[in-house]
Image (cartoon, rainbow, N blue to C red; front, side, top):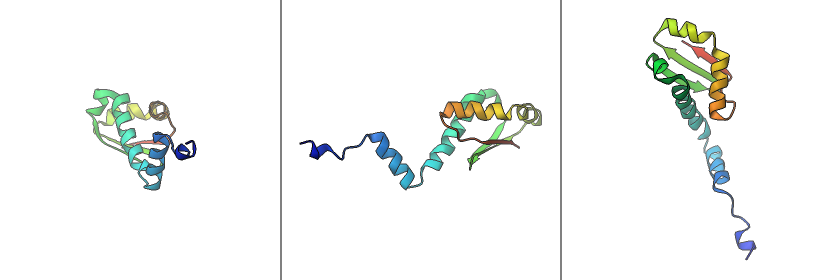
Length: 98
C-alpha cells in the first residue's frame, strides 16, 4: 500500500515544476511586480504612472509627472527593497524612472 502512494508530491511542488518547464515563471513575476507597484505606491502615484515593465531584474516605470519622477528618484533603492519585501523574494535589482 505504501508503494502506491510513494510518487505523490505536494501540489505546490508540482505547480513550480510546471511553471519552470513551460517558462511561465517570468510572466508571473512580471504580473506580480506590477501588482506590487500598485499596492505599494497607492492611487496617488498610480494616477501619474503611464506604464510599468519588469524584465531581467530591471523595473522600468514611465511617469507623466517630471516632479514626481524627480522625487521618487531619490528613493529608488528603498522602492526596490519595499517591492522585493512585498514579493517575498529578490526580483528587482534596479529601478528606472522615465
